Length: 75
Figure (cartoon, rainbow, N blue to C red):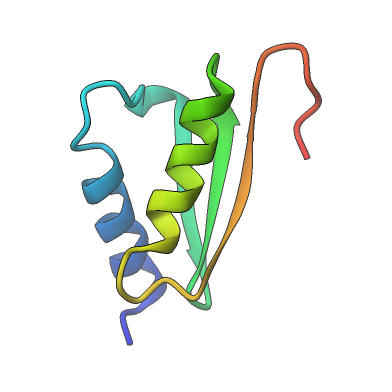
C-alpha cells in the first residue's frame, strides 16, 4: 500500500495528464488511502469524470469528490 503523499502524487500525475483538466484549480489530498478532490470547476461533467477516474487508480480506497461549480456551495 502506498503512503498518502505518494498516492496523492500518483493521482495528480494521472488526472493532470489530460490538458482539459485545469491543474491550478484542483487540490488533491490523500488520507489513509482515501482521495479528496477540492476546488471549483465550470463543468459538472468534468467533476464527475475526475471522481470516477480517481476511483479507478490502483491504491485508491475511495474518493471524496468535493469539487463544485461556481455558484454552488462547497461541501
